[in-house]
Length: 161
Image 1 (tube, helix red, strand yellow):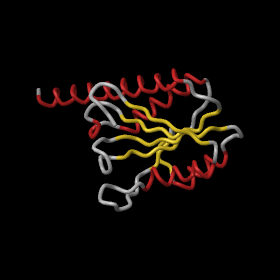
Image 2 (image 1 turned 30 degrees about the horizontal axis):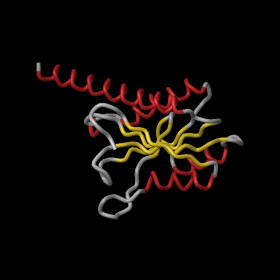
Image 3 (image 1 turned 90 degrees about the vertical axis):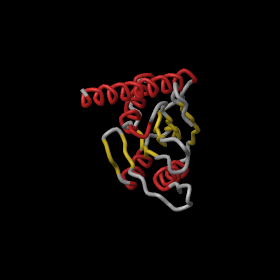
Image 4 (image 1 turned 180 degrees about the vertical axis):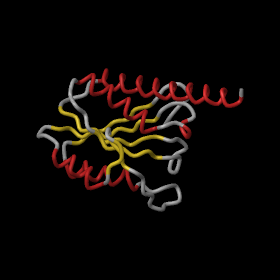
């Protein structure tokens, strides 16, 4: 999913609330490489949420909401990055682009079913997203990961010195 220089954003969407809820179950409990069910913590813009709160977000979504299933796979050495923060910054960029709140439900997936750490995110969007919106998401996720990596490297250098 990820490469060394640019984040990858994959997206599909649905308008069906049932499919959105199924996606929440998937991102929380996707099986690992060994075939065993894993339970991951869900989070949104305000921090951790439980599955019932996530379902309520879907139920309360305004008519016409499109549920975008996003995979955010930052570049770099992601095992040591804060994927929730990268997701928050990426989703904030989306809100700025579309000029509307964009609540989301996400779960970080460690390298337990792919070689890369990544985030599965269900974004509740009122309206359409254009190709330029996805380019902005990719750019922001890349920048956020690189900023974190730079800060982590700076801290490590200070600890050595």
